[in-house]
Length: 300
Ligand SMILES: C[S@@+](CC[C@H](N)C(=O)[O-])C[C@H]1O[C@@H](n2cnc3c(N)ncnc32)[C@H](O)[C@@H]1O
Image (cartoon, rainbow, N blue to C red; front, side, top):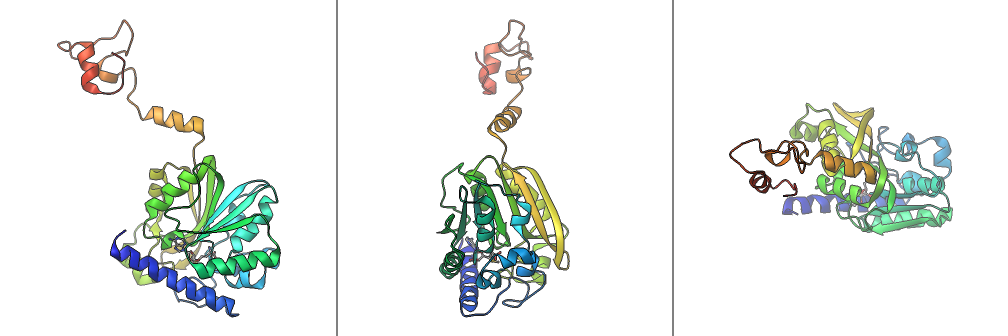
């Protein structure tokens, strides 16, 4: 990690530590263009009143998101869910209700003060199927292939290494697992400088990816069925959006990998690999030489 990235992450941590303390002392908070100020585009107003009523006042007051990922993740009884950047725990507690006693909801956050607030909130509702982990979303402290659903609410834009977040999310999901994320996304035409003019990094604006960058980042990590749907504008040309994607099933992963390998019918510069009919495309080359030179995996 560069010194600049480390400084930026520390600035983010300090900002959210201060926010957690503010909420713990009876205030409220919001992620948005204006630091620590209520903005209708962010926070608990994005949840249904019935959902807010299920939770302790402090969990609602600590809501800093730009959407409601639990509303789109379509959680089922028994599923294992992780919330990246869980803050005061609002989405973990809602998820815990959805997945029930046979499921599990993890919250991951790097800020001690937020984790303390989330734990206190979980205690208030008597949630037994939740666990809060300290760590970063760029190095998720969970084993590979163990999670059914990854949610996140207005956090990925704060990461200084988004490819690592996408790769880690892919790693922990089971094949066929899915993501349901709310995040700030910029119009494709906006340069990084133009995004920064619209709001600061810790306020969830300047670090936002564009629609194309988000899609390409997820696809580069291996995700399929990527859908990014804007829900409301949070600044000029910048939107809160719902991001959905899936990790291919094991069968599909094999098919995709096979599709990326050279086709047997043309591999190794021969017309038909491994059959009596095969012949080198270049008649001065022997079949064995063509296969060896190509290194594409045909049998000699
Ligand atoms: C905008 S708040 C959102 C909190 C919560 N998702 C919600 O909806 O209320 C961002 C949270 O992400 C955490 N965070 C930011 N960057 C992080 C990182 N790289 N790794 C882990 N947590 C991070 C912060 O500590 C903070 O609690």
